[in-house]
Image (cartoon, rainbow, N blue to C red; front, side):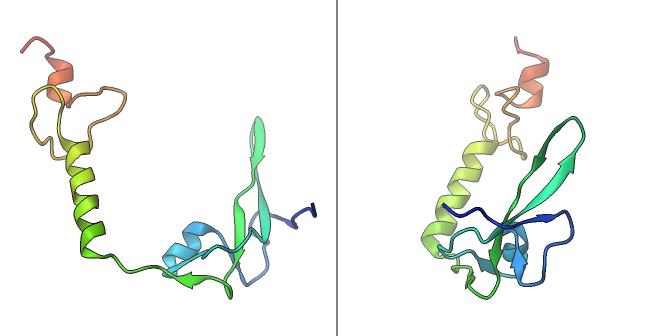
Length: 109
């Protein structure tokens, strides 16, 4: 297996982008293999190695269909609903608490 080219942080050549950068451009990797990596140094830990993809091989993001939009809305509603009081909290329930903040603050009510 050939090793991938590695570039220093902020020194990748033009024509490469991370997944987030592609998404900001309205693109997706589209099944292509990773073309290179970037070495992002960190203190006291091993460096991050974000993958880079070729922009010219990227494909447009698929449009949101009504079915996918409905499924996403249903999933977000489930994340906002407190399993204890069954109310919509208006925010995503923290996984660390497992319940909405009022239920976590006053567990006996």
